[in-house]
Length: 169
Image (cartoon, rainbow, N blue to C red; front, side):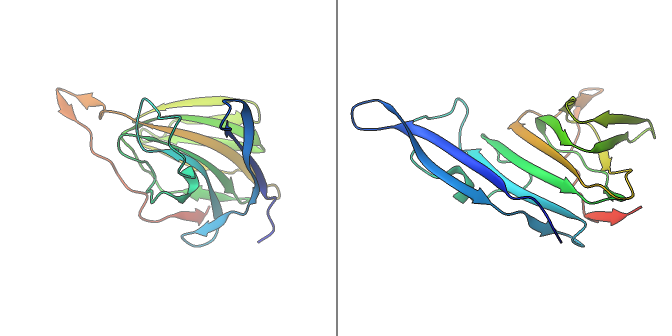
């Protein structure tokens, strides 16, 4: 599956307190489910507020879709004509469409077309992502921040894992 690697630059401090680049690497995406999408984990934090003295490479932490108490930066590449399963996470997500066009589908069936340069603020809702293009992949950067569950009638809404992965639509 052809994909464009991501370059990741990480900054920190030297012993004198001056800003330095601590890592400059190229990251390859990892196929998920039935290989119709690639996930590239870019960074995580173990806590919020973040400990900027933590020298751990954020990509090295064990993480699910989210990281309880922390944050996750992941880039998703949806191949042409693919759709994720409906899912919900107890997180606040910033989805930044970098290339291509995607559709955001909500559990009531509403679909919103989102083009490159647009940002979605996802607040613990049931949703799926679809790449409507027949030929072009779509790339989305997601920043997921741990959050309390959204509530309806004073009842917290549970996480719903995307069991089916990504499928051809």
